[in-house]
Length: 125
Image 1 (tube, rainbow, N blue to C red):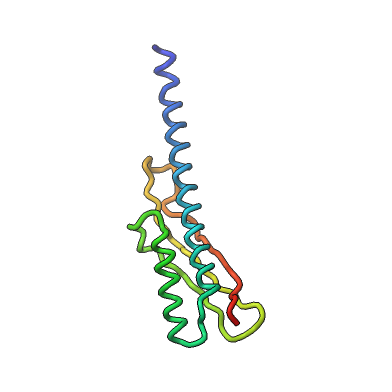
Image 2 (image 1 turned 120 degrees about the horizontal axis):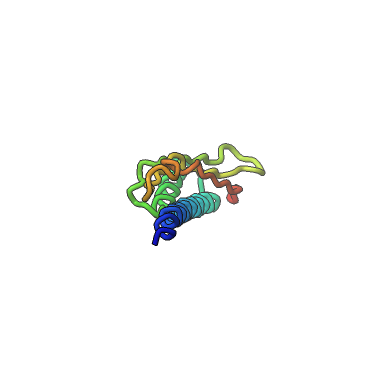
């Protein structure tokens, strides 16, 4: 019993740490997938006029927000850079910065995920 009392808190702390970091990396991966999907959608959406660019921005933002795991994370801004002008190498960039992370065990993980970015080449010239 004495040995278990000594080892149990260490094993419990190790187990909680593993679970917490697994949740952190799961949310990071899901956010990365959402950003990639938004950038991919922007790469194939027509943006010839100002109205189309505004519609594309709204569509990309809603796509990224729909694919976020935590719907309460609407405070995280979705940053979109659309192609400007005409050229052979135009890109669509989508990033999310400041996505909050609520830890089950306080103090083990950072309060928010790092910035997640994706970039795709714009296909419609």
